[in-house]
Length: 241
Image (cartoon, rainbow, N blue to C red; front, side, top):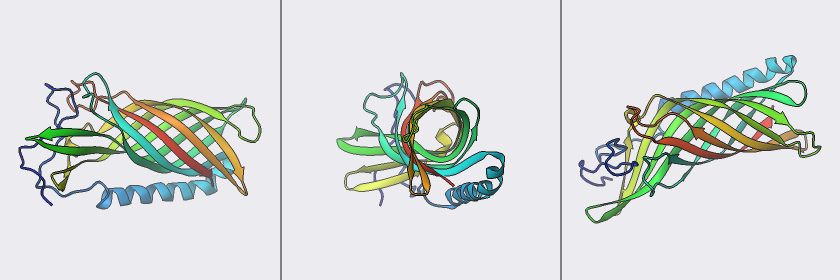
């Protein structure tokens, strides 16, 4: 359904900054449709299954993981009314065990980030959810604490991301609209990930739970002039294959 006239453009930035993250009502697109997501998920699954055979012989474990992203934007140019949106992440990982409880864990995740904000135009209130989808590649240095049963760990490392899609969903005045605004954002992102996790042996599986914070370091302004960055808290569950 159409929503408002084409002149409606929304911004997640503080007033006065012209970095449009908006929509026009002649679009009806979704980040969850089309070939890109299917191709990426197929590649991730194939990679994990193939790796589970070869890497086991090298002392490298691998697995799959998925969970929730509590995502928002941070930075001095972000409007204070911007709120968090609940999205998801899923993918696979490898873990190379080193001496004294240390390991290196690269991951490949299909991760949806973004934020939510409310804006009033001509007396009509619109709820807008901006989603930005990436292939995230964090490389984590983990330390496994010498505690039995729960086997806790802490980790930190850089994260690099490639933009896959971006979408603005707007609802208001009894209607809704979706806009593909991928061209608004830079094609890549970088950040630092820090977090902690637990490993629980359940039957024949090792079930891992981790909570992490992804602190974006690359501006979401394509021209690099605005201080707007990804901020994501993730709660992920994984299992070793």
